[in-house]
Length: 420
Ligand code: UD1
Image (spheres, rainbow, N blue to C red):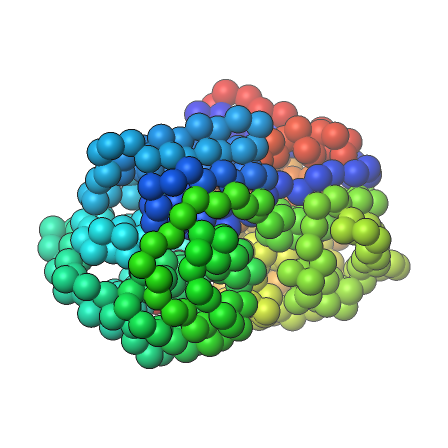
């Protein structure tokens, strides 16, 4: 296992290109199960999670070839319907093979993904939506088994206790595209990655309207064909790099970003003293005067993303004043708090809130991350800290950030990988 070593205190400067969105590519790869034709996906990031999805697709009878950011998925003669625990448990997004398998074959047996360090993460909304399409569902021995004579379009409400669900919307949409008749999903997730999946499905021949809004309308079709698609830029990677610029008092130009996917973050960072300017699909991020403490509440898109909460906290930790960070999607997603406090931060956790009292400077320390975005937060904290920080269990970062240390090195950061 590798760890990341960071010598903090360097102002990051230069240009960096953001990779394709992890949360887009995973369901889009799963959607290739809906056809026997070849599908070509471009702008695919080299991530641990993309390789996990390749493995799962191969276990379900697909050929997957990956070359220079382009994935070609073709069918073999042996289609499978069984997604094994060993493959699904490594990554929650694996569960989104359920929808396409049910859509195409009207049957599937997929392992339940289980919880993880950021919270319980149930799948009741996925089940509710697929059941509404007329499928029989049996949950036994850690597996969800689905059978349907036929799928029938339905009008459903897919909101849960914490609002809409990204992967449940993806799953139900992928089953409904091949159901008979019309499906309406109310309280659908509006995340750009859900809209990107819908765009891919439309290229495959699906009839979808309203994607990117809370009401998605789908008219089922009998057949879907192959398609070529380019993945949207990763807004969470972009956001992480934006905070890297601010936290080090640097000046970073980001290429391959979609400005309109970053509204809530740009607004909050502006309030916190950032100067963010855009030109031609690229943005420049630097400070404007002294940073200011801001309160942040995570919400479903277009609200402030829960996947940016930990990184924002790293910034607030060294910003003078009091900042209250409220987590409304995953109330337990605060594993980074204790580690930041080990670096000298002053954070008090109160239920789903973290009260951050900004300090002047963090001091480097050995820290351990337990999930993807918490790792990104600790990397950012290390970049801003005095002295040396080591972030253990770097495989979490590799799940969602492509060439992370090379990108930071190119911006001038003193960061490298070592064996644990
Ligand atoms: C996706 C993202 C993840 C992000 C999350 C929230 C992918 C691959 N992952 O995860 O990076 O942090 O959205 O933006 O796209 N819930 C239920 N019942 C369900 C499903 C979810 O109650 O059946 C709850 C969850 O526990 C959570 C909230 O709904 O509180 C939102 O979760 P959801 O949008 O489903 O997250 P994922 O799709 O798993």
